[in-house]
Length: 486
RNA sequence: GGCCCCGUCGUCUAGCGGCCUAGGACUCUGGCUUCUCAAGUCAGCUACGAGGGUUCGAAUCCCUUCGGGGCUACCA
Image (cartoon, rainbow, N blue to C red):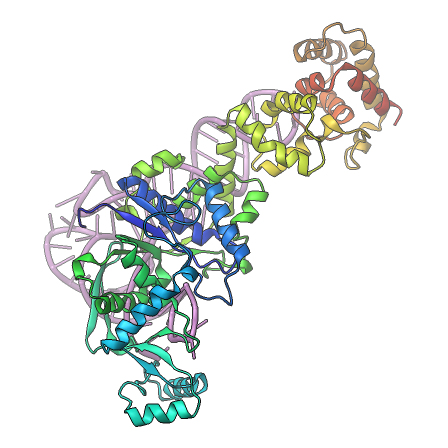
């Protein structure tokens, strides 16, 4: 690799919400830029105006920001090589297309889509390599005039010379393509708008990108990109370095898509996954630090990430492992961090409105559930019993405290708790253990389960005595009394 | 079909000729702990796709084969 300053770009085409695969690529791009102390450039490839929308562009920007993948050049932050939306660079592409035409590197092609499809169909039948047959490569002025008279539109097609293209992929080694399988490709549509094949190459050169790390689906488009560099007069040593990242696949072994799992990062965000967890997990898909470390921070990723350690084989997305990592990250949060992540979920669920007293109660309850949840979306259900106005024991648990034995336990607990002077979890536990366990000789599991159901409404809850403390004496006694008369 | 890429436990991976009767993590199973659920902890299950070479020695190198994936657009 050259010694010039590294510039890596992430250039999605936002035809939908950014998904797991996109983000894994963005993450590697970002990490590599940070690792090398280089520049991270973010560019929007919106040359397909029929599929890219402003909302998706904005969503992509928001997602990257939410994940903490900050960029040095691109939308919102600007830079010396903008604009960073390809739709705002149309004049640049038009100029280069004209240059290619002038130099005979490209030519106008008047074939209609139907004619091209017919050719491809014939090629399939004849079992030969499909692709443009060069029909319009050497048109005479008379032929061109005739086509124009017919009212035909023309696309601009790049002339692919005979020979081969070999480039070094940093992950896969040398890769060679015979031009017999790289047909002349379209640079500009009949309506004058540029295609990816033109824009991507022009922009990478003009924006001085040094490293192209992207999905392996683009591997076979690389010779076309290199052809454009040649036509632009770029010296081979100035071509960007290519590295094609392995796919992230779904359960069914196909490229991850909506059919096999949740792929939109927006979905993970609202399902209560932490950006750090998503990035940590995704970093492990196709890359590893080389040792047995798996829980890594963003800072460590930047420090450790190298293209050499990236795999060449595809990885399957495993939700279970993401969940495990998310749980780890939640447990590693400080209470204040945990609080600020949780509040939106509690508000959205209608558990709290956000008053100071509610927040204070949430904050003291959070330590009790921190090691009990895997996603933030579980917080509301875990804490609902502390805030509910119309308390009721859940249906599955109610029968478990309907028997005489349970009533006895609850009555005894009520009478022993009522005179209790200090309502803290240690005192509550001491009182209950003395009466229920020692005096009545009950098994803790039996005695405390009955109380748990009465106080929290469920057989599953945060630790009982701490929960009772937070609930307050009045509410607890009320609920126990209520359970007795159930 | 053609071209290209890929192939270690169920999954993510370590491994770059001897340290491998293949290590870690997630999942799963069982134990411990225990006021529930978790967390924690201990143990167990399970892998070098196959076949040929090269070599004293191969998961590691070569070939073939099989399998998977991508591309084959006036999408990116």
